[in-house]
Length: 320
Image 1 (cartoon, rainbow, N blue to C red):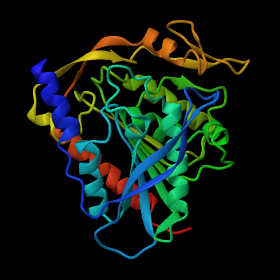
Image 2: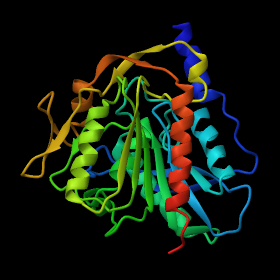
Image 3: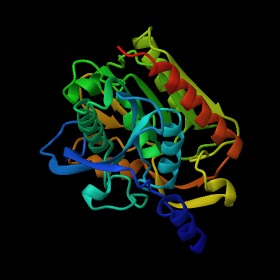
C-alpha cells in the first residue's frame, strides 16, 4: 500500500508549474454519455504556456490528462513542446468537477465530459490573437487519449456542434480503443498513436483494429500506430523508470467494448448493457476488472516523445 501511495504522489503531485503559465476558464458541461441527457454545467479550466521562442500567432497543442489528473507527466511533456515552438493548453478536467484522481472509479468523469472540455477549450484558443486557430493539435494520455483519438471521427464532431473537425492533427498515448460507431468516417487529419505491446489496461490490438476501420472509412486518412515491444501502460511517464512494476489495485476497462447497433443504440458487449447517460457507470463498471501493471520504459518513452514532436512539427508547420 505504501508503494501505491508513493507512486501516486510521484505521478501526480510532484508538479513544477511554470510561473508564466496563464489560467483560463470556459463554459463546459458534464454529460455522462453521448446522448447528452441533461448534462450538468461546469466552468472548465485550463493552463496555457507559450513557446520560449518564435513570433505569434503560435501553433498550439491541447493536452488532455490521465485518470490521475493533471500531473508531472503532462507538465513535463508540455515543457518539451514549448521548447520546440508550440503553445500548450493543458486542460484540467477534474478539479472543476471536484475530483482529484478517478482511478477508483473511471466513470466519475466520463470521456464525453472531457470531449466537451476539448471543444470548448479550442474555442478559447480560437479567440486568441496569439494562437493560429488553423494550427491546433490535440494530444491525450490514457483517459484523455480517447477524446484525443475519437475527436477525429465525423460522428463525434457532429455531436459536439462542428461540421468539420477544428483540429489539424491528433496524437494519443495508450488510449482505450473499444468504442465503435456505425459510421467510422474521420476528418482525414493525421493521427499518431503510441501504445505498449504489454499494456494490460488498454489492449493494443483494439487500437490497431480501430485505426484500420477509420482508414477503411476514410482512405485519405494518415494514421500510424506505434507498438512498443515489452512496454506497459504509462511507459513514457518520466518518473516510472525509477520505480519497480506497479500492480494497480483498481478496476481497468481492458475487457470493455461498446458498439453502436443498427438502431443507433450503444451496447457494451461483455455485460450486454445498453449504454446511456443513466446506465454509463453500471455498464463500464460491469466490464472493468482488477489486475494490471504499469511500468516505465525510458527508451520507448524518449522515442515516442521524439516521434510526437516531429509529427507535430510537420503537421502544424504550414499556416492555412
